[in-house]
Length: 321
Image 1 (cartoon, one colour):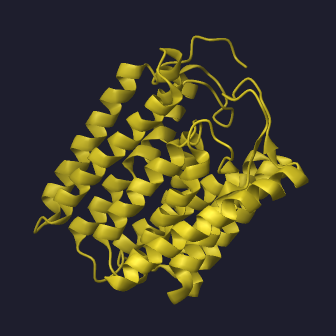
Image 2 (tube, rainbow, N blue to C red):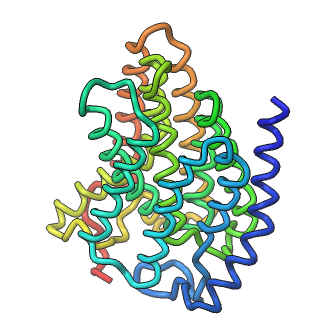
């Protein structure tokens, strides 16, 4: 237990120290998020927050298993490249799939045959894009993934637990600067990193000797970012928009459009993740996978209902940016 506490505290300290440095580097290199039609801020805000979170995760938790650093580092590099030069959609997708293949190699699952690697690649791509879509308001993605990381730390053991705690600690330190009004953003580098980290933790829940209920509980923990992608696909298909073009129809966009403050909309997601994590914890202690499957179905229904209530399953009535 002492080691786990140290891991979390070291990650917090590293993130608190590294984030101002990332801000300075981002400003000097021009890797900043400038105001635009899809941007909520009125001034340029530095990216590269993901670099600080990466350092915290590596120093705090991945030292015991260096191979875990590889997919996380590659995700950060791919995302920073996207921040800097706006990669083509197919280039991004190919890079995300390659990262998923590395996750599958680093964290082999007990799923039969080729099913394990295929699922790990698919969830890696899904979660990278899910966290990227959620990263639209101050403190939203960092807060939500921080809660998910704590849930995985409870669910898992060994190196995966340490990585989860380090990730949570790094995000806690980063959120000191990312709280509204944010002084730095995760950027694509950060959102790709967080999505990949969730994929690593989910794959760890599918690895031996984890029980089937643990694997399903892991799926419940990542349900919110996964659902964000599915809702966006439905919405963009219904509006006959390209799937790779952004829009302002996410649930948090709809909440802000209704007058919610940015912090309130972010907290709505974070509180939802707390509830989902609680359901996942209850499912994980079941003796069989059946209660966990029921819990996953309940969470799916609740998330669809929430999306319908916010109107995020229908096209945004506002004009295209």
